[in-house]
Image 1 (cartoon, rainbow, N blue to C red):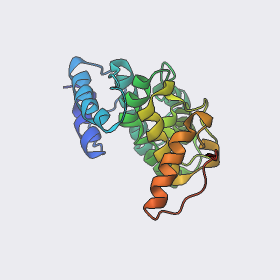
Image 2 (cartoon, helix red, strand yellow):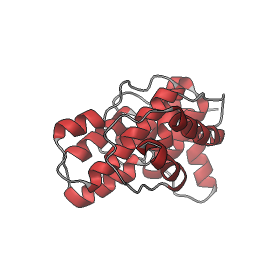
Image 3 (cartoon, rainbow, N blue to C red):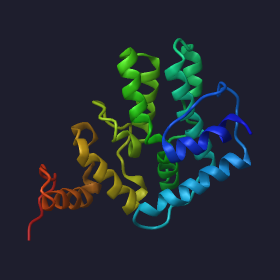
Image 4 (spheres, rainbow, N blue to C red):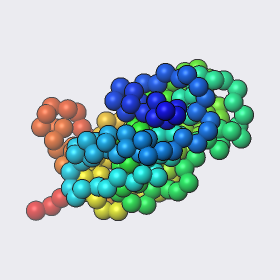
Length: 210
């Protein structure tokens, strides 16, 4: 059993990690892919709309990145070049599969960023995590970053992902992460639902007229 196979169960189902070795070597394997696919199959059931397929390469890359970011958090002084190499994805998200597969583990990155900030303020680890979160907006919207996403969060028009993003945005309502016009319908829906629940809300960008 390699380090990725050993760490994935607690990361995926408990949101925690306990290191026994450095996660420096490539650890992709059929078993790691199986663990990630199994968790994703359950995770994607909570997303409305057409079924989103699992992307194995994105899953291995994103889970390795989160584990290595966690390792860097408890091992001070890692070289910047090593952090840059470890904490990078080979591609940006261009499909619903990319977005949701990565979100399976990237949703933990905002908390990692908070812990890194509490320990060391701005440093290369924080900067790398923030860069990833801006590239992957479905997870990045959870972080409360002052700088918005690198590209508009349109999610190839997938309605479930657009709704999920609007729900997450409504938690903090950071102006820089405000959904663009293509998500107005979902922002209105979320804000109206929160208003009915008695949750204080702002107003949606678009006003509907009968």
